[in-house]
Image (cartoon, rainbow, N blue to C red; front, side, top):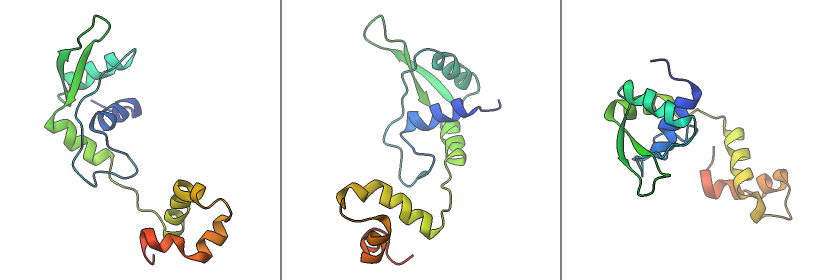
Length: 123
């Protein structure tokens, strides 16, 4: 089966894994409750052996949940291999996450002050 970006997203989301960060630790979840067209996508993943159908939810509205199989986890690890970022790009992405804590500093001033070193060291 050729995975589409939507299939890849479902596998990663079911495991609670970010494509950017990759498998830095064991997944903290393994389930997905699809709705709409994702029900079809999950069935396709189940037919390919990458997911399996779990039990249905407690209400009539809830459909089945799906769980990623060992084969699906192996595929997800390939999909989510972290992208190697240049040091400057890593610092800028960090700034986007923490910049609100430094409202009086521009990105350049934050760099010069060395706050990024507390998070990433000297890269």
